[in-house]
Image 1 (cartoon, rainbow, N blue to C red):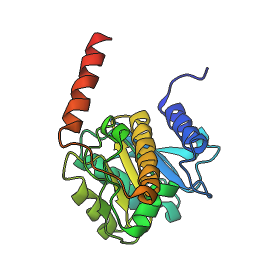
Image 2: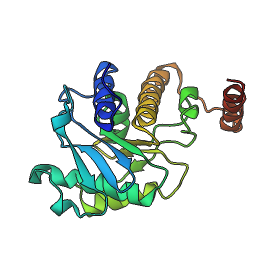
Image 3: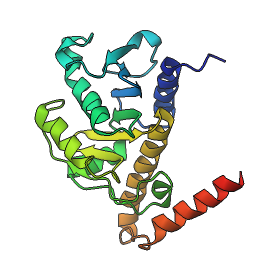
Amino acid sequence: MPASTPENTLINVADTLQTRGLLFLGAHANLSLRERDRVLMTRGGSVADLHADDLVWLDLNVEAAEQPFEPAYREIISMHTRLYQAREDVGAIIHCHPRHATAFAVAQRAVPAVYEPMLRQDIHRDVPVVPWAPRGSSASVDGILRAFEDPAHVAVLLANHGALVTGATPEQALSRLTAIEEGAEVVLNAIALGGAQPLPDAAYAEVAARMRTFESAA
C-alpha cells in the first residue's frame, strides 16, 4: 500500500470522486489541502487518473500571478488560498460539478438541509448560492468569502457553475460533497411526491448529541 502522503491523499480523493460519480463528463475539478503556510493543489482541468506530477505546492501568502501555475489555471488559485486565509478551520477544498448539486446551482436554488446524512456532516443550513461572476475573479472570490463569513457554512454552490466544499481534511470534504450531492438528488426526486419536507428544528442538535455519545463509547 502506498505511503500516506499529502499527494497520495489528494490522488485517492480524486479517484473516489470518479468512482462515486461526483464528477461531470469532463472530470473537471480542483482539489487542495493545507499544511500550515503552504497548499498542495491540483494544477487544473481533469482530475481523472491524477498523478503526483499533476499536483503543486504553493506558498499560501504568495499572489496567484507569482505561483508556479500555467497562466490558464492561475485564476483558480485565489479561490482556494483566500478561503484558507479567511477560515482557519478549513484544511481542504474540493471544487467540482456534480450533476444534481450543479442543477441547483444553475437554477440558483440552495440545496435544502432536509437529508439527514447532511446533518451528520455538519451541514445543518441550506447550502447557499454565491452570485455568478467569472470564475476566479475578485467578484467571484469575494462572494465565496462572504458566504463563508458564517462559520456554520462549510459548502456553497457557485451560481450557474458548480459546488465548492470544505473540510478539515480532504476526506471530510469528500464526505460532505457526497452528502450534498445525494441530498440534491433526493430533493429533486421528492418533488414528484409533493416536495421535500423539513426536518424538525431540533434535528441537528439531536443528531450531533447522538454522534458524540457513540464516539465517546468507542
